[in-house]
Image 1 (cartoon, rainbow, N blue to C red):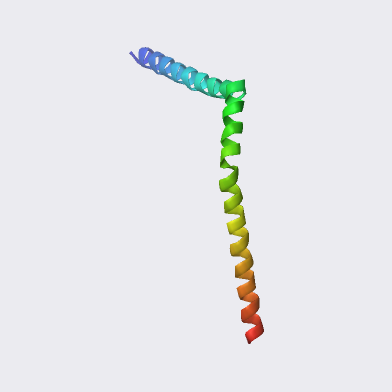
Image 2 (cartoon, helix red, strand yellow):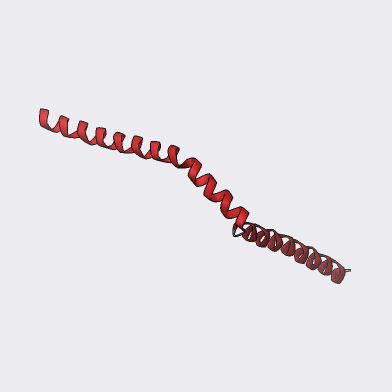
Length: 76
């Protein structure tokens, strides 16, 4: 009976590993396919205005923070 339990556990582990590996390989193959490359490039291009706007906003916030700190230093 114990051998049967260990055998079944081994089969389950083997099947689980196979399914996981197949999913990983399929995902990696899709990423390097022409359609996958096109999809990622399109997503990057579409997000460019948002990323640019966020970077400009972050720069302005950092500049204003630094400017306020220097103004407080001069008043004292």
